[in-house]
Length: 72
Ligand SMILES: [Zn+2]
Image 1 (cartoon, rainbow, N blue to C red):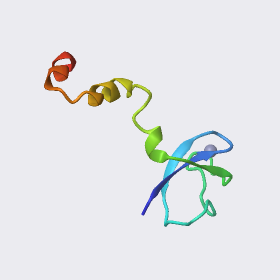
Image 2 (image 1 turned 90 degrees about the vertical axis):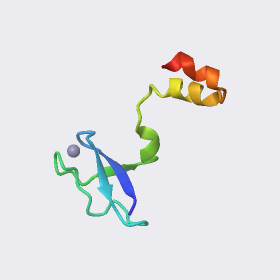
Image 3 (image 1 turned 120 degrees about the vertical axis):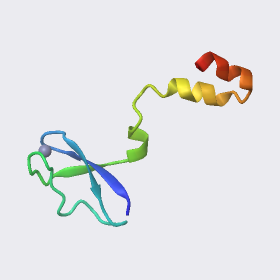
Image 4 (image 1 turned 45 degrees about the vertical axis):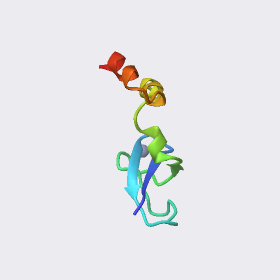
């Protein structure tokens, strides 16, 4: 069952809901304020990890063993 991320239209609170594939936002309510006008956010996985993932991408780019010594 996929995990969907929603954002409340009223208080901007973000929360995750387990839903069956194809289900819409019907019946979903914000856990903080109870608002039912919530917007499904795209790409839950891309939102995770924060903005500081640039360094790990640069490290993964180089496959040579010598490159790893600078990161430890
Ligand atoms: Zn809310």
